[in-house]
Amino acid sequence: MQNNTVYLNGDYLPLNEAKISVLDRGFLFGDGIYEVIPAYNGHLFHFEEHLIRLENSLAAIRLANPHSREQWSAILTPLLIGTQDQYIYLQITRGTAPKRDHGFPENTPPTVFAMCSPIVPMAERDSGVKVLTMTDSRWKLCNTKAITLLANILHRQEAIDQHCAEALLIKDDYVTEGAASNVFAVIDGVLITPPKSADILPGITRDVILELAQKNAIPCKEQSFSLAALQTASEIWITSSTREIIPVVECDERMVGDGKPGAVWLKMNQLFQAYKQSLA
Ligand code: PDD
Image (cartoon, rainbow, N blue to C red; front, side):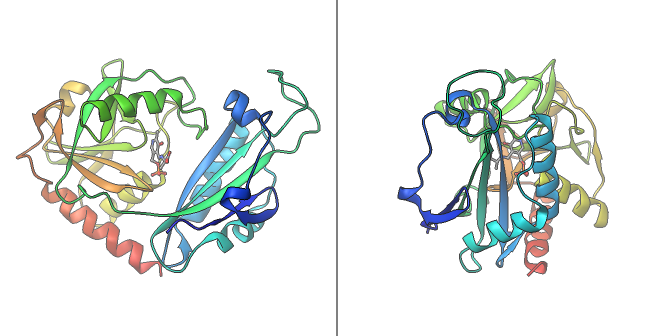
């Protein structure tokens, strides 16, 4: 169940009472950033890494961080409900200025909003999903977790319209990431994911997978790969905090591997689930 209590600018209040002005710059300009932080067994998962990414996103849009790490922990922890798998959505915008003006407003406090929702495992996780590749139409700040997600949602919807779970984005012939996920492929027996750059969001799930692969002797590397190379992959996965690790069994209407979740995914998913539980 969705937690009915949300956090808005210093108050905890029922979701339907949380209101912001139509002059909020998040509403008018998409002028803000966000984080999605999972929690397992009542603990925020890799909280420090999420806070570092939050700090980087704030710095990228030149917005001062309104809270210390200790304050963020104190603000977000009360939103958690029991020990179910859940995630915090946290959004910070440049606040509500007296008039609409592109330039940054002065003396305007940011708007801080947070809510908590359950992580519902994707029904198709164990059987795999279909994806569609398409030209990445996004901007040059893809490593910033900006709320300005119009290109991402148009990509995702194009995939949904074709009965696919995700769009895999291609820039200059190279695979970047999904519309709301990072991408991994097993090519010639090696687990590969594109390196961090301004073309992708540095996913926390991505980092955890790389760490688990290294610790468990699964050959892996961070390396760019082309669409042509993707088409030779024996496995493809998409990863994110809310979907975890999802195997892809069809890409552009072509079967991936033998059309079933692969052995490397099975192993990595087991490692990931065990790792989550170990952090209790
Ligand atoms: N999105 N790339 C993009 C473009 C994303 O939007 C996301 C996550 C990721 C994966 O990052 P992480 O592993 O830290 O969740 C990669 C979140 C879940 C969202 O927008 O809801």
